[in-house]
Image (cartoon, helix red, strand yellow):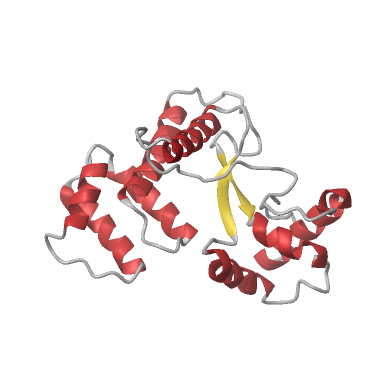
Length: 225
């Protein structure tokens, strides 16, 4: 299990990333120690890394760090318990239970403009800044795959339990590792194309253009996520 020193080190990483100054002996450390004392440091590091990558508006709570760390632990244990020659349940997420998508609110707002002329150099940085300023959300984020694999079921139950806890104060539930479940109609799936000459920005532009053109009927009306 993680030691108090190791946990404090991860808390310091979060504090530095969010511009917070924590004094020695702060009760903030105690809260994280209590939430993470039964988790191995390797999984805590993975959880902290995932949260930093998502660039949340506020410093992640002990419950959020624990949820992400436990999710990493569950995934690793599942891999250890399954034979190497097994067949994947889901090729989309490779049984991880989560996938990376484009921000659906951003897609809903700008979908009608998706074409080669609109995706000029620098558009991805502008999109990232827009999502951060408007909704305090990342442009590329992770969602539950929603498939039949075991990990996806775990993450979906976390979301359901968390929603129940919001309705009923007597229910105690940690923050889910991922907040939403993949919707293929409105969540463009992030992927790299097979063309090695294209950079990330060009790849993403191609994916979004194809997504918007796939079925224009999905974009009729005033749908908002």
